[in-house]
Length: 413
Length: 164
Ligand SMILES: Cc1ncc(COP(=O)(O)O)c(C=O)c1O
Image 1: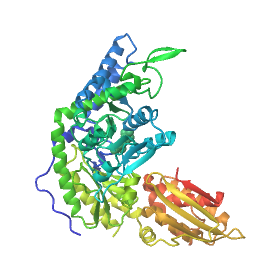
Image 2: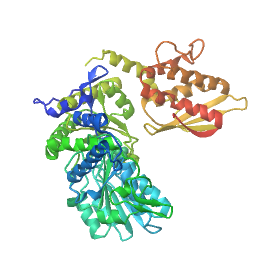
Image 3: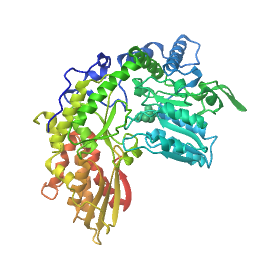
Image 4: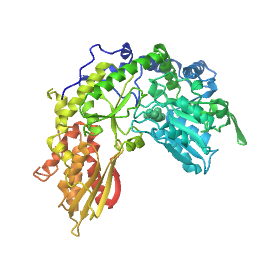
């Protein structure tokens, strides 16, 4: 067993120091966090923005006449404006704030699809999807009698585009597709796919949970109808998320949940719903979380999404080349176009055992099925180990990963 | 590279030779067609699944047992040790061993180990090989998975068990 040669010039960026949680040791070793695809760490500016809000400004939004309520509302709505600009939506009415990607997708399934589909209609998804872009469609299919159709992937974990296009028949009501696979890192050519779907008159939802953190998103350029993402994958707080929706479609959709804030007038004879986007935001929202998400966007923009993408690419290439030299490594997911995520197997060591051994050396990776069981089934495995990189990782982290894998090989030799 | 840090000692304690041996060559692996009792163990954390088969005879004795499925080294070794241990025991005795093993593994702290048997003589002594999981709270469920399946097979005949 010989270990791969290390990179002589260390690949590192200053951004790591912005993340307080990374300044600690686990099991006596400096923490190496390679699980950003599950949830990203938060920079100090996000943590402090949320804390300052709680210390100085907290009140309910949209309903008070007093100073704090104004401040809270301004900050909350200010975050919505930042989100709009960040993804280049045409209008702030198109930015619906949710608890996460999962809620955003369920909202579309229940409010956009459910009233309009029935037996004979199809919803098209792909084999690459995260469970949260599968199960909401299964539910609405069961509720309406529509069929769920799944487009295949190849052995490298890429969509078989010709098959996908062939499945875009006239009876397809909706296409729901991930931008970037969380399990394999595959980046789908969503712009081309959306263009093709639109020619067929098929509305498209993009699950962007893993897209937004890695690249500049422009929903007008993508021309998609819905784009869903989560705050916690992009260095913001948990329990926040966004549904971008094309205004003309959101207008026609009935509310998803009833409650306060989503109404203009309530009487027992009937209720007049609020305007967009509030029609879809029932109840007191995650005010501090959304304000924190706004701070996360400020942080990302201060660095620049292109700089992040360039850095991640270089680091990812290094990780893949180092991993590739470890005896007994098998990569799962080798798409040509990939985000900074690599799934792998090592010898016949179960990923759960590998996860424990790595954790014991301060290296945090994700193991198991990554909420994408159909992807695992496609490759005939029950799970993988997955290392995912972000702007706060560096080549030392990769070297520590490799060292830890060698320890695992020793334990299991 | 040498393995000598305290962390690695914990790892060595988790992955003892006996555990690795049972994980690599599980005993009583496969389906038991003459089973009278079966149960599935499902670990929702990793999605691992194993099926346990028991043949209980008229004297309420477990005359044969086996398991199949896939899992991590800990869960497979534990299932293998289980089948090794309980074959030949009375149902009541097997339930007592289930109690003792789950108590022993879920009680944190190295101090007060619940003995598996009064004297840790064979055939029970080798179950102590599972003790390493006590330092790894996230892995206790892997070690107890097969045991919960045993308990539910004996209690209900045929039902899935989870570690929850
Ligand atoms: C591709 C993808 N879609 C959807 C989700 C669900 O996101 P959330 O749990 O934040 O709603 C995730 C998160 O793991 C994901 O990676």
